[in-house]
Image 1 (tube, rainbow, N blue to C red):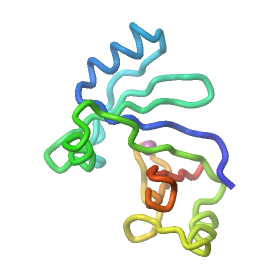
Image 2 (image 1 turned 90 degrees about the horizontal axis):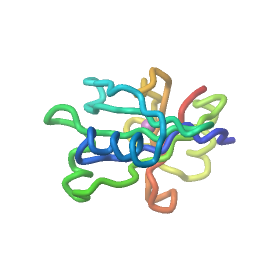
Image 3 (image 1 turned 30 degrees about the vertical axis):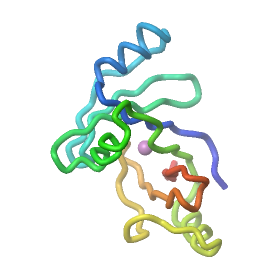
Image 4 (image 1 turned 180 degrees about the vertical axis):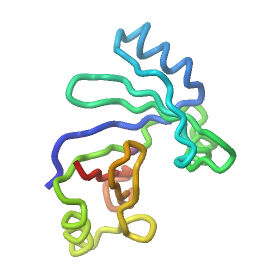
Length: 134
Ligand code: CO
């Protein structure tokens, strides 16, 4: 069902510093920063071969990652994103298995312009999971 790991999202308290660490210390290619006001985040993508690391920094006062940063002041892994062929089939399968979908359960437009749902971390070993339609 789940396919490629599309990205690992990491919330960071200082985006420029995080970019410096990945680019200058670890030697990875890092994208320019991109503001996504609809999602309340500024992002930069670290290219690591077949997947990406998505550096997330809050944008605006109502950013959904602000509370995460308040609890984890040095940042941390926020979610994993897996690709699927058909997000609605996947969603229905997960509901049948007793898993909880966050929000109203309907796929919404994610940060990459693709349909996504988020799965309850308590159902997945304490990890927030994003499912993205390829
Ligand atoms: Co994501």
